[in-house]
Length: 208
Image (cartoon, rainbow, N blue to C red; front, top):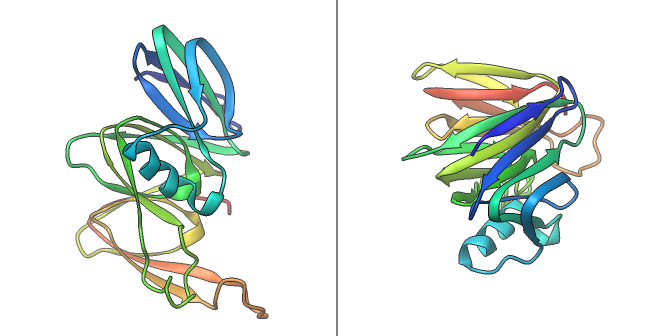
């Protein structure tokens, strides 16, 4: 699946589809469709049900599937503002953890599973922040601002603000260290600090 990223600071990704290929994105992110591409706002089947419930929990913005029925198609997705688009190629046993709201689009075959963080059940951590990706295919993320890339060695530590954590390898150990509680009135803002321990790659975005 080929793609082209257009723009420098306010980016768009144009994704080429061959006959039979499908890609999904959130409602409101589509910029254009070219060729014999059919959209499905209510995809059926256990795979699509699982993806929908993970990417758009509790009735949030639904996903739409775009399938190329013949020849070649082109689908363009716009971002929600200034930032960078990051592509992840999923293959073999690769597993990554990404910020749920950062997903612009992903090809059929990418499996999405909710990541349950310690502290969610007690109300110390906001739920549904991150998902784990596996399977095969391409994933496109949007990181507001610029992207900062780290490669952590084994047992190397990094403390980050969770709202700026775009993605990390599943090999990176992650422990929430929340300050305050979500939605609680306080003179100090709620901050979800994350203590990360390598090995693995970590990518941060620079704007909340």
